[in-house]
Length: 128
Image 1 (cartoon, rainbow, N blue to C red):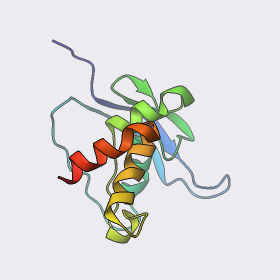
Image 2: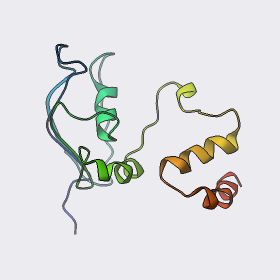
Image 3: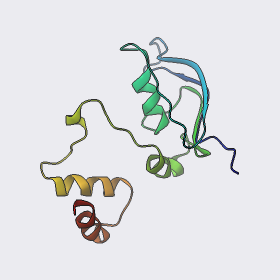
């Protein structure tokens, strides 16, 4: 049985700007595949920052984030990481990129590198 954690965060520190206060300070955690975890806290406590670090939207100032063993700091792994660790934003308007559902579904396929000629049947199947 695979014992590698699905998500591993080691001594993670994040700062938005070089002279700004730390948004996250030496966070470490390990989450096995299939486990459900809730991250709770007040506004401004770093929940969204952590989520953006987990899918590679942000990169650690210090420390490391691994998703299924892939380091979010490795450029060649970022699309594989984002296929594994997605993010749903709080505001529904932030999820939509197009004015038509068909184009919005196409956008998702673009983000995971599906060739344009392969998209129409996949979009049709998803919408069906």
